[in-house]
Length: 150
Image 1 (cartoon, rainbow, N blue to C red):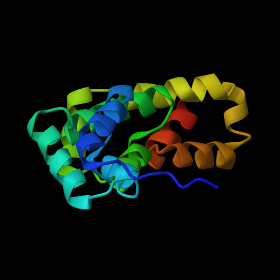
Image 2 (cartoon, one colour):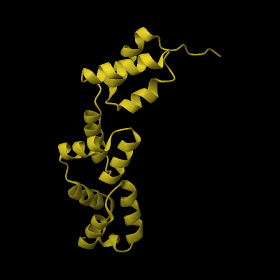
Image 3 (tube, rainbow, N blue to C red):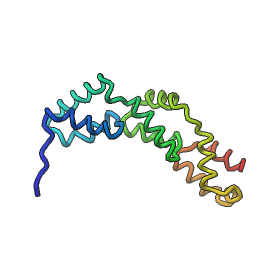
Image 4 (cartoon, rainbow, N blue to C red):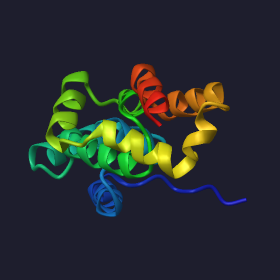
């Protein structure tokens, strides 16, 4: 079995930029993705800082892209916020990203509800629907309102 060689200091920037070219990453994601692959932790941190200064690595941009992606996948703001926190994005950056995206969460919940459930079915499977949408990250009060109105 051949052991993989560590990424040399001179190649760290290229490897990180290749990852960023595929999709946005948070600083924490990049760090965790590469820490076990590089020869020098200090070189990785140095390159992360340079990329941040150059605007090539941005938690703000990552948070906005992530929110939009999860929104269009049918997830709600509570779950998305939790996931962003797990990915190392600071609370104030998360709040700013939610404001910047300007997405309509109420209409998203209603659209997802209508896509998944026939209105007369909703009253019969009340608990199941609530559990599903809570898991998806929507607010209980808004879930109840949608069920009641349909």
